[in-house]
Image (cartoon, rainbow, N blue to C red):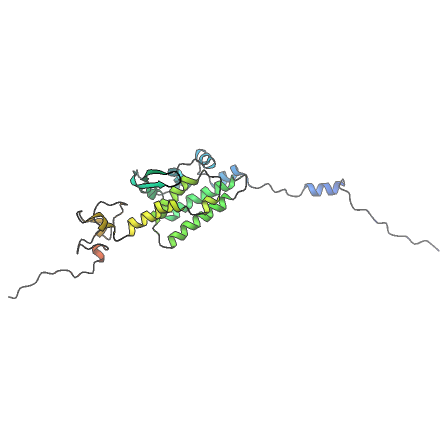
Length: 261
């Protein structure tokens, strides 16, 4: 009677097994995104100086327009700034004059879409160089969402842009991403609240007095007055009432009476 042949159990390959070593070595290793290559491939219009200033937190807000592709930038002429009000810093007990820079920035970013392009590129650059992984890119996205919410609620783009520029100037060097998410009430009061009152309050002209000439552009539907602090009276040139232009006046027009023959 012949003995039964039992199957031989093979031991699992050891870590030193050449086959196992080769298969492990051939597995792809995630390396992430190379910042320089990303900028070169996707943001080639951003120059080295602008890139350095962004990563250093010292970008001049006037250069935000450089983040828009050259062919998409609106034509910009020289614009000067003027004093628009007083800024009271309660924490520092400091009072300072605020320069109205909006005429220049309104030419750079005539619409929210233009500013959105620039701030999105800015957020992408902050995110790609975010070595500590503190989510600056996410914070900037939440920031743009807040700006869009204000516009959807009926705030003027001029007022929102004023806040956006002041916020960028104040917080771009901060290492805390939360400053992009939370609303700054002091900046809001000195930008959005002030500008909404200037552009939309029907009692503004009354406070300025009636001894001023009536603004012609205000009464022209095709032009409209675009001066942030117009020195002329925003009143109807037809009935002299405040709160509406001539083309919206509902007062009956006076017609010359015809005499009977």
